Length: 281
Image (cartoon, rainbow, N blue to C red; front, side, top):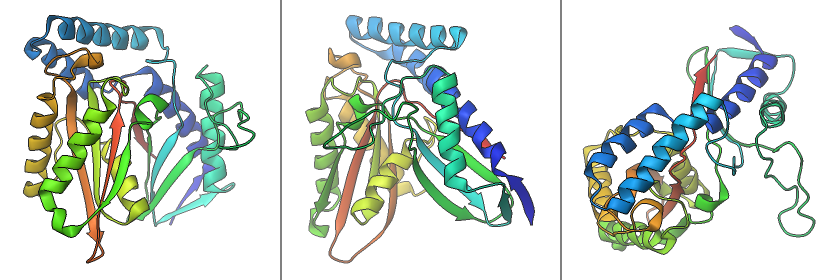
């Protein structure tokens, strides 16, 4: 059994919050550079160039990619051979988010009550935490801050099993078309299929942590990812929603077993500033 002081988790989370908000993932940056060569719209090319310049300036100056540094979404893979000491896991994560957002001069966007008071918590806590117990003696932490422009454009629907693949494709395309320019394209499209209402939404969010170019291990779902990406990029929405052939950078699908009478589907969109950062302790 390996012992790990939760202070290490706090420090890691604080750093990851800043890294995720300052540095566009290299795989996505390289993808945008490639898209710059294939984008058919001159205005789309200009916008992609600006996105690339923005990412490079943010990295050079250690400043946020976007003013909306989002709610802190944290995925934890906790090895079952790890014994945490010095405090509670969730409290350590919240402390790390608070430290990262305050010391990193990141915008605090969390309000304590969603409907009535809506008072800012002043440190972007509480984080949204998803924890999995996995084999081993390591702790993997992934931070995926999510801004509201793209988060507001997500959707979830309980399809009927008879709707099948065609129903899933229609729902994803309808969601992207309805979102239009609002999620700041080029977007990354996360799709969760199966489970139940909350599980498929979590799957859609988790899929957005996948690097660009990494596909579902099931060939059928990988083929569906490719088909959806092609069809989304033919919508003409384009960079910033001003027209073009680069509406999405990727479509990532995750799936889970579900009830015999259900076909839940969730779509979660990331803007071009698709923030994510990971470490293993």
